[in-house]
Amino acid sequence: MLQQPEDVVQRWEAAWNSADAEALAGLFAEDADFVNVVGLWWHDRDRIREAHAYGFSTIFPGSTITMGTPRVRMIGDRAATVHSKWRLRGQISPDDEPADEREGIFTFVLERREDGWITVAAQNTDIVRGAETHISTGGTRKSVPYRTPR
View 1 (cartoon, rainbow, N blue to C red):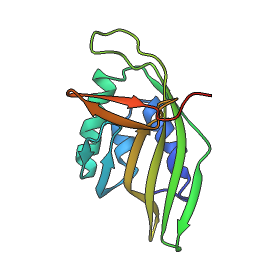
View 2 (view 1 turned 45 degrees about the vertical axis):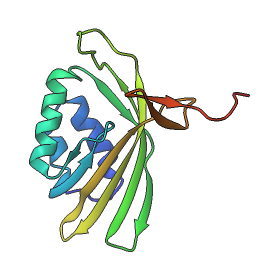
View 3 (view 1 turned 90 degrees about the vertical axis):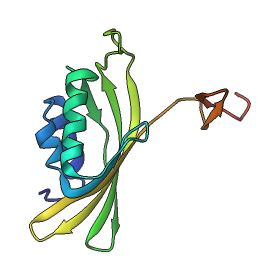
């Protein structure tokens, strides 16, 4: 359990940078939900653990994440949202080639329990600089701007 809602950010970073899917999953309630950057939705702690163990071995081996300063919004005294920007280095492509650095924003929803705070939901979003939304055309989805560059 976490002592404060914002502790989730530092603990996420530590678990990720140790490639520790068990510690990462331990931040979540048994029935937690997690939506990743491409919309895959895992509905419990075991699936969150399995998905991240796979990611650490296949997509992100040796990667590092740097989490930003958390922004906490209390929802009454028993719930909170925590947002944090992140930067990721060390992802590899399906061809085993180094990928460029990525950045995004995490949203964590936490619930206060008797012995501390636990994450009940999380959602991870990539930041795509210069884009405002996604568009699907011809079976392909891409990030696009609508405003004229200034």
